Structures are given as C-alpha cells and as structure tokens.
Image 1: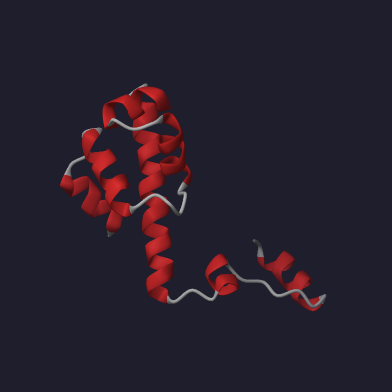
Image 2: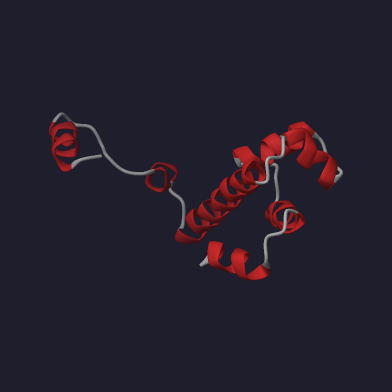
Length: 102
C-alpha cells in the first residue's frame, strides 16, 4: 500500500497493518506461516514447470488430487513434512530447500 493511501485511511480512523498484526502472531508464528506459504508456492511452481497436473503429482506422491490442491493452497491441515517430502519427490535438492528457508 502506498504512503498516501495509508495516511488517508489512518486519518479516517482505519488501522493499517499486516496479517501478523491482525492475528497477533508472535515472530516465530509469523515465520512459520511464511515458511509454509513459501513451500506451498514453490511446490505449485515446480509442478507447473515440470508440466504435471495435480492428479499426476498426486499419483507420484501416492496421494490424492485434493490433497495436492490443499498443499498448494497452504491449507492448515498440511504439514511442513509433507510439503518438504513432496518437493524432494519433484527433484528439489536439500540446498534448494535450505535457500527457501533462509
């Protein structure tokens, strides 16, 4: 959001912040959410680069298409472990994963 718009909203009594502020997340919780979203986004990008459908990826992972959709959407029921294992199955290296977490 640009500064002008932010100041205009604040002048009208609006509070401007981010999701972490709104949800009152600790720095650790905010970092966890950011990591999970980064892994989810990378999973979707990698799947698309490899020209795989969600169904094809699901078969590779011995899972379901709906589970892959949840992984890509950052659904709270999806564990970090599953995201990491899925990226490794798509050929991501440990070095690539480390860069994503840094």
